[in-house]
Amino acid sequence: MIDRALNLQNELSYNVDRRGQKMKKLAMILLAASCSAFAETSTDGIFVSGFGTIGAARSDTDKAQFVRSNQAEGVADTAKIGLDSNLGLQASYEFNDVVSVTTQVLTRKSTSPSYTTELTLAFVQVKIDDELNLRVGRMGLPTFLISDYQNVGYANTLMRPPIEMYSQTPMETANGVDFNYQHAFDSWNFTAQGLAGVSRGKLFLPRSGVTEDYRAPTVALALGAQVGSVTLRVSRVEAKLSSDDNVPINDIVTALNSSGFVQLGNDITLITGKKIAFTAVGLTGKWHNIVVQSEYGQRRNKDQSSVPDTDAWYAMVGYRLGNVLPYYSHADFKGAGSSITLSSNFPTSGALSSSVRGVLTSAAQSSDTLGVRWDFARSVALKVQIDRIKPTSKSGSLIYGPAAGLKDTVTVVGATLDFVF
Image (cartoon, rainbow, N blue to C red; front, side, top):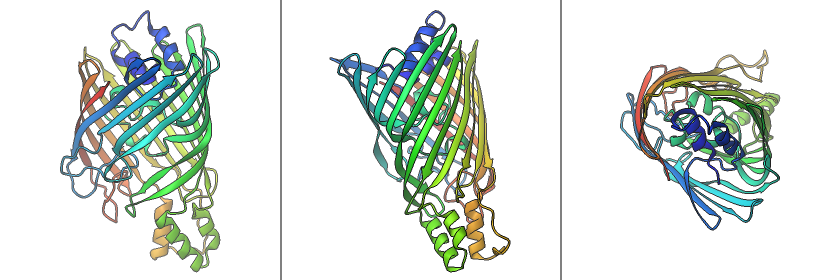
């Protein structure tokens, strides 16, 4: 199976033969049904490949922990290897030129303090023609610019996807059906991916330190256009998120009901399912040795819900010097209001007021990132990165912070060894 993400990374930054083969490689990328980035080996129609990251990181504070999206354990002022380290394996089998199956498993630290292994891909693909294929099973959601390979360190310039953007919706996969379509027109290549299914999984709740199970019927559409070394992607994901075991929300709803604010409790609860939409637009490009990547995304409620509306964006620029690529990135996310308006008779002080207003308020932070990537061997890259995190509301994306919120600037230093095989 063709590797979409590895080819894309090579196309943008590291491919030494990048002139006459660009359009041919892009067509292969867009036809790829795989959603990960590895070097492949095959035997009699069986393709096996993998990727991994070995990394260590620490921050300069013990007041809170720095985490990736949806992680239950992060790093403080002691170096740990669990923040960025992972291992992924993928196997595909082609029955013929039309039908194939693919599975992928990923081991990492996510909603548990321990390493866990997840089935991240499991689908049957039917190739309709050279431009269209259909898949049934578990696929990745096309939410972000790099959703196809966000867990593959080697395929990305940055050490990790910007948390400000990618923490807005931690849903990564869905069980259902999708289509992938691509069409070349002169020097332009257009792509479309549509998905309908149900996303299920766990969400870590930093306020209570526990996880909740969620279910979300989901539809998604992503459109892309590429010309030369510039790619533009627009995506839209709509989901009806429900959860029975969100302890903090359920406790608040119980308190509201007993205090006579039944309608507010109905608005806040997630048990009945609330419609949420996420829209993103992203751009990648390369001009001579300059590499750029940028993305903007917003989360909006279509029902009244306790989930705050948010806006986020980031921009990265790098300059390639042979096998070395230094880069800088700035990212920002903040609240964009709430879908719930409190009534005039709702108390302005007290425990219940504080709890309700707390869940309706979004966290917020910005960050500045400076790093360097060194491709010192085939299929292996070393990265060193420094992040300067500036939380402005509710400790930002940091977890286990003080009850009043942490507003001190936090510095995180990390190093990773990314590889594919």
